[in-house]
Figure 1 (cartoon, rainbow, N blue to C red):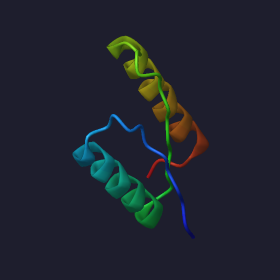
Figure 2: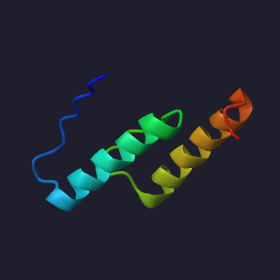
Figure 3: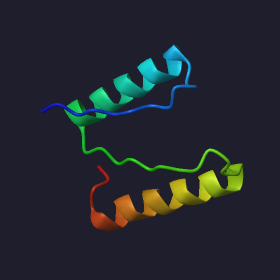
Figure 4: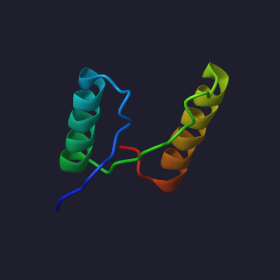
Length: 64
């Protein structure tokens, strides 16, 4: 399977490489859960969405 991801041009090469490695690891070793947030999200908003996703994973039985 080939997955193509278009990253923002302003991302530094290290961030693009880290993202590619993270996606490759997630697809190879687990069930990927991807959350997209706005670039202007506050720390509280990021924390809130992470908490919601974690609850969803636990309630769905996907958590190990």
